[in-house]
Image 1: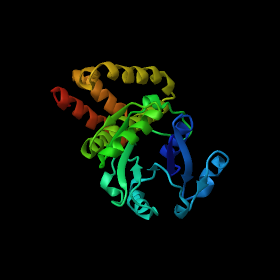
Image 2 (image 1 turned 45 degrees about the vertical axis):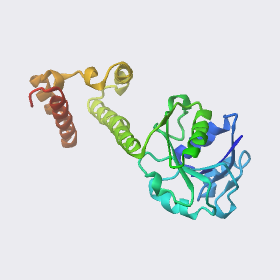
Image 3 (image 1 turned 30 degrees about the vertical axis):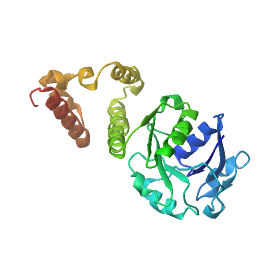
Image 4 (image 1 turned 135 degrees about the vertical axis):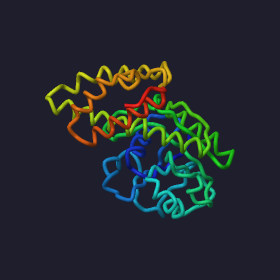
Length: 255
């Protein structure tokens, strides 16, 4: 049985706790959070604390906290020589204090506290400095049912950046689409099958081959009509920027 202490109770920390609670070979022996009321509802199922000096001995300490907090928090841990891993996509493994055995357990997925999470669909990227620590981190990831991948800091950094494009930016485009449909009382729900089909298609084709639409075809009449229909300058700027990007990628003529 691998003993784990989780530090942090944000989206990632909460889902990790729930995932580990179902794992047969993982025991979350303690959950730390600076604000104790946040984890108070879990006091009957796990030992909770907001005191770093009260941390229990464990096989691994997982820092599921914001990037800016990682260096300070890891330096404040009242022990050394134990395996400490953060869950960040962009923070460097060397942001962890050198008194620890250092690792990264990066779940490449978008987390929301209220949304259910199936870790079978969450690839976990693993990085360690000490080679002996890798098998333990891999076992922890596999206990969640997640596929694992060993990567280095540079690969993790660009994966996190790419994730911002395919997830955060894409979600903002959904919001823009919602605003556009609302402007004329059209139903955004009618676009949901298209959203699902687009996501499905990229599982089978490269994004390059999956591209369709008026920008790719250089359909000038449609492009101009769309720009004329858009009321907000911000939406027009996004439309023009992405149109230009598609056309430069596929060698089409400019607007």
